[in-house]
Length: 172
Length: 408
Image (cartoon, rainbow over all chains, first blue to last red; front, top):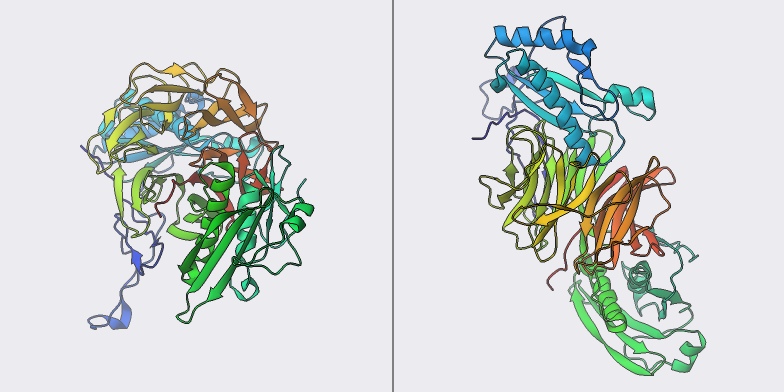
C-alpha cells in the first residue's frame, strides 16, 4: 500500500519539441494566497497562488532542536543528541495523530546515488531511535536528500559538518 | 595537441595513434546557410577521436564536382567530403554531399536530405554518421541525443540535446533537484528522480509529449532507475523495507519485486545490453564496490577489486567494457575496465568525475567533471586519448546519460 505524502510545490514541466503549453504535475498546489481582493465574485477573477516552500511543514514541539548532526561516514546518533530525540519522542507519543518526515543528508563528497543511500541510513537511524522509545513507526517516514540540499554551501570541514545531518520535519 | 576549433564551443584535445586524415570542404552555399554543415561534420568526426581534419581551404567544390585527388593527396588527406546546401522556395533546405576515397580515387557515395531549417544540424550529424560508418565500419553516434541536468541558482532543469551538446531543449524545470536521468531503449522516454515532493520519487517521462507518470513513490526514498532493455520494467532502489535495496517494477507501474536481500546499501543498478545481467553498487563488503547478478536476482559476484570506493557503473552496449568512478586519494576519477580480463585504466586527469555513460556504439563515454573551475560535460575515447568538452547550458551541468541509436 502506498503511503503518499503530497507537498505543495508546483513544477513547470516544459514540453520538448513542437507541443505547446505547460503540464501540471501530480503534486497539488495549495492556495496560500490571501483573498482575491476587489475581484471577488467577478467572472474574470483570478486567484493568485504563491508557492510556499514551507507549505506542508507543521509546528513541532516548541523549544526542541530538530537537527541531528553526524560524523563523517557515520550514521550513529551521538549521545549529545539523545535529549533532542527524547523530546520529539515524548511529543509524538503524546500526539499520535502527528506525523514527521526525517530527512537525511550528506556532505558533498562522493556520488549522488550512494550519498542518497547514506543519507537514508541517517534518517533511519533517527527513526529507529524514536521507535525504540515507543513512538509508533506509522508516524514516521524516513527519506533522504543525499548531497542535493546542503544547509551550507562550500567545501571544507566546517561546511561539511553542518551538512551531515538528519532533519525532523512535522508534516502533520 | 589539436588546436581548438574557435568557431565552436566544442574543444577537442589529445592525439590518437590512428586518426584518419580527412578534408571537409565548406559546402557550397554554406556561407549563406544558418548552419555551417562541413564544420558540424568535422567537429563530430574529430570528437570521435578517429579522425583528424586537414586543411580544406581555398577550394570551391560540391557533390557534383570531380575533385583533383592529387591535390588532396598532397594535402595528406585520405578522404574528402564535399557538398552543398541550398535554400528551397518553400523555406526548407536541400543538403547534399559526396564522400571520396582520396587514396584509391573512389567515389564512396553520398546522400541528399530535404529538411526544415530546424533540422540542418540533424542532417549534418547524419552526414557524419555516413562518413564514419563508411570509413571505420562502425555505426556513428552523431545523430543520437543525450540527457543531462543543470542547476542555475535554485532552479533545476532536465535537458535533451544532440550528442554534441547543442540544440538543447528543456524537458522539465523544477525548483527542486532532479538526478539520475536514464533513457529507455527506444529513446522515447526518460526515467529520473525528482525531489519536487520533498522526498525522492521516480518518474517516467515521454520526451516528445511531456506526459509523465509517477513510477515509484513508496514509503521512504525511491531512486536510481534503470531500464531493462526490453522496456518492460525498470530496476530501482527503494527504502520501503528499510535500507536501500534493489527492486524491479513494471514500466506501467505496480508492485515492486525485490531483487537484493542484504543489510547493506545496494544501489545504482544498470542492465547489460542483452538484459541478462544487472551491475550495481553494494557496500556489503564494507565499502562501495561494483557487483553483478542475474537480472532476476540471485547471488551477486564482485566485479571491482582495486580501490576502496567504486560507484556509478555503466556497461558498454557490446558488453566488453565497464566504466565507473573510483575514489583515488580524495579524487573521484573515471575508470574503464575490460570485462574479459579485469584490466582497469584510469583515463582522465580531472579529479571530480561523475556519472559516466557509454555511447551506443561503445566507442565513447560522456561524463560530468569540473574543468577550469566549472562543471562541464566531456566525451572521451575509451583509452582516454581524445577528449572533448561539450557545448552546454549556463550554470552547473551534471548527470549526463547517452541515448540510444535513433530510428531514421
